[in-house]
Image 1 (tube, one colour):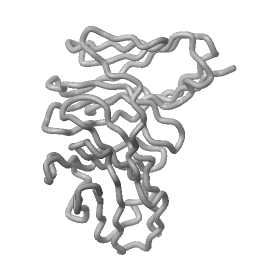
Image 2 (cartoon, chains in turn green, blue):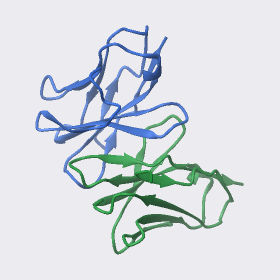
Image 3 (cartoon, helix red, strand yellow):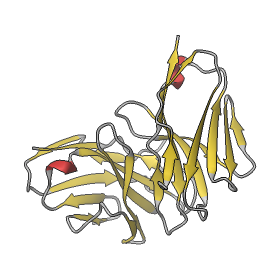
Image 4 (tube, chains in turn green, cyan):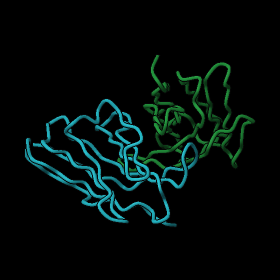
Length: 110
Length: 114
């Protein structure tokens, strides 16, 4: 099983719709989880951290399911500017090794 | 907002040459990282660095690679003898604490090995 696995997409979603991505991770000892966003040929930028209790930031909701070893990201009322690649990021719990998934490409359609 | 700065933004080199990629992390950060991203592929972990030593490295980070913090501000990645497959975007990142929270990324150095 890959360390961090995501559906690469692309997800083509009409503006205003709700879209959700999942990400699975292999190491049950993983401690910290994040969603990053990467625009084409730019550096990754933190979108949000993912907490055990789940967390929400405006239109974005992140959830963690430790038992099944996955995290999710929900985007409500999607905007054209949400078009990007969404990267699932996991601290593997071994020293300081923070691993990125391949990313899920999202295209918001007008 | 404070920034991680990387230079140069683009580097072209001949196969077999040595390159040094430079990064200035955010000043009060203590944890430093190098990642690379081959075009169209995932962001790959190379190495993490804390307290003047490597804390973790990946299989990619072989003897051709080295990192250094030569002074209080710079963090460098050296590739001793570049290969064609080293062509990638190299991102430096820093954070202010272990096991948690935000990695601040520089805008990257695009390395092209000819």
